[in-house]
Image 1: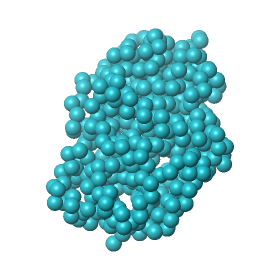
Image 2: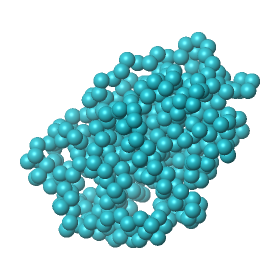
Image 3: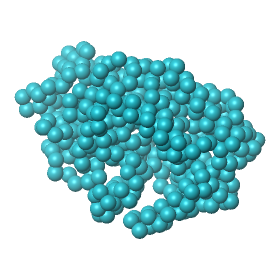
Length: 451
């Protein structure tokens, strides 16, 4: 195993995953690797939502920008996630954020999340990206009666902290929203957010960055980074890139040594997704599930799912501990069993494709966007906690302004919640082992699946 990565090499295989997204888009010709020696104003490491959004904005500001990625633009989590453009980005509760940072900072972070969703919608429109945008609104489904009572209490919390009034839907009203009540005991509807085709969006961002003047290189993993006069020198397999400033936007696919500061601060976690064959109208009616809104449940080991525009059903869950083929096969089998428990009318339905990817937690359970300590001119934007479609996009756009102006304190458009440097996780060498224990405890807390 590569000591610079937390998981087995299979997790970082640069070939495109056999995902529904990759199968339903015309993949562009690969962008070539960095070769020889190049110089640029800003180097961006990682061609996902954050890196591409930053590159697009920096190039628009007249700076030369070079983006390098270990695989291809959109290959990582940005091109293989569930396509939930929604609020989120942190694993801290609203009450925890308010206690830790204060009410003004909590409200600023909440406002940022709403603006992030709106930013993606605006980008799709202004750049002419057809990403199969779906209906606005996201359902949070209570997996047991006590969870619905917690949603009711949470609605009061949202009103007190943010002056918001989310819609509560008791169990007997779920069917009226096109939601099967089997296994669910009520819901909370957040009107902010919409589903999309994540890879179409990522590839559209790549085109937009190139159109603005950014240069993109694939198959160019950065294996070394060192000071170089007033800037930085990055080494890849076939080239050297010198830049005055650097943005690290590698999220769950980060190396432990790039830079060394990052080591032990991140906890990549495996998320597994599959897509069924198209469901007939009779099959959808039999289960009582017709909504096309994004949905997820209140389990700590959450399930997330949605009906796609072509009537396939997408289902995802956390819980994997290994990227080995057999381990992933067991995880996908478990995910299908969970689908059958939650949606019994679809038990045994044919699965067309399944794939996995890495989400990213931080030691602070909040994203980080800002300068890398002790490395003048180097910035990081990462740690989206499984909700990066919107948050990563707006963060990349806004941190570009800070980079363009030369450093910290020059731009105040990123919230304080994202400014605190994540601490290193305890005993980082044992993170995967600790994750396994955590998963077992959370599974017990979540309780059994419905029968």
